[in-house]
Amino acid sequence: MILFCLLSCQKKAERKAAVYAVKNHIKAWNFYRQHQPDSAYVYYTKAAAETKDRSVLAQIYAAMAIIQSDQGDYYGSDETAVRSLRYFRENDPYLPSVYNVIAINKYKQRDYEGAAAWYQRAIATDTGRMGKLIYRNNLGVAYTELKRYDAAIRLFGSLLSDPLIKADTGKFAQALDNYHWAKWKHFPIYDADPGYRAALKLRVNIHDLWGQNASYAHLADYYFKVQPDSALKYATLMYRTAHILESPDDRLEALQKLVRLGEGRAAKVYFDRYVNLQDSISSARGASRSQFALVRYESEKAKAENLKLQKDITDQRYGLLRQRILLLSLLILIAVASVLVIGFIRRRQSGMRREAAERLRAQQQKTSKRVHDVLANDLYRIMSDLDNGTGGTAAELADRLEVLYERARDLSYEDEPVPLDHFEVHLAAMLGSFATERTKVLPDNCTAAFWQGTEDRVKQEVSLVLQELMVNVRKHSRASL
Image 1 (tube, helix red, strand yellow):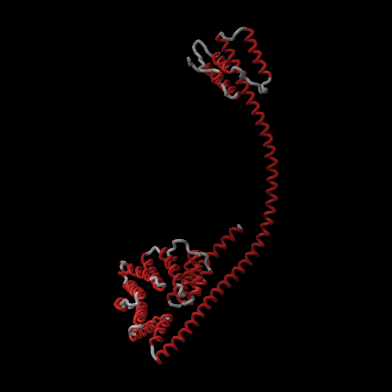
Image 2 (cartoon, helix red, strand yellow; image 1 turned 30 degrees about the vertical axis):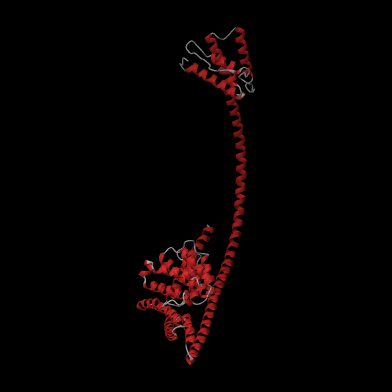
């Protein structure tokens, strides 16, 4: 009863924790949708501390890794993403997205080899066609940075011919822009302008600001040496678009281009903005990393303190419970031991009586069997010989009766009721003694060679069985042969 109560309390506590985990998980997701990553991270951390469900933990840590990556905490994001992999099961549909986050972190840290490897993992594990296509595009970008231009061009070319990509204007424009970017990087004299402009036009038509930002970056790089004025125009457009998107990394990249393309006072203004923005980004990301680390520390600390408190309470409860159990166990042990001892004595006495009765019954059965097999059948055989007139002379009959008498004197002797010397002669004679005018008995192939190698015990049993058979035939059967 005590154990049942403890288990019930434990189950209630687990259900309560599960409810809180779900609530905090939902809060975290709502904050993330409202573009409040810091608050989302805090509630994801709380939800992770309140659940032990593998699938829930995997999704929570994956979401936390994405938040850290978005905030520039790439090392922390990698650590959280790897932690989520411990909880994901094989073939989980969310697993490729975690590989993609790790790949993005590697790419942002200019580890393009690592990024390519993780993109390949995402492609290999994603079961959806669109997911594979998106990761293939990302892999092509990594290949371009690695100067594996032929592989990148083949990837982007296959994307442009895919029906799913063709049906999605944004994805098609992205693949088109990247295709001409890779070809231009491979062949600097390649005329990428028509392809860049075609991709930009598609992006403008669907109001894809992120896509436009990428197009402006490629156009600024393309015109940097050949038409600096055009390059300056596109770098300025990229800076404005990045400001609208509130993307500090893209603003920083645009300012780098403007510093290189600007002249005199304008270049100095851009440079000052670049330095201030870079300091601001470094400070903000440092603060984010510190905040994420602090949130994790506080969560782990609270979890450890809670576990310690639960352990202390549990230890106290189990201490009292152990004392009660020991006392109760001692009383039960004494009662059980008493019952066992009394039961053992009674069973021993009953067993001894039963064994004695079984020995007596076995002896009686053995004696009865020997009377039947040895005396009754032999006596019936003598009577049969007398009926048939084959009993021999009076002296021979007296000898056979004397042998029968000697056997009857002590049935406990383990004598051999069947003569084993010339067994075939004995057996033929025994069978022949049951022949009458009405019944013929013809032993077939009863020779010494036939019985050679047969154990004496088997000969004894066969003789007695056949003799019993013949007695029953004589008494009950009307067989003539």
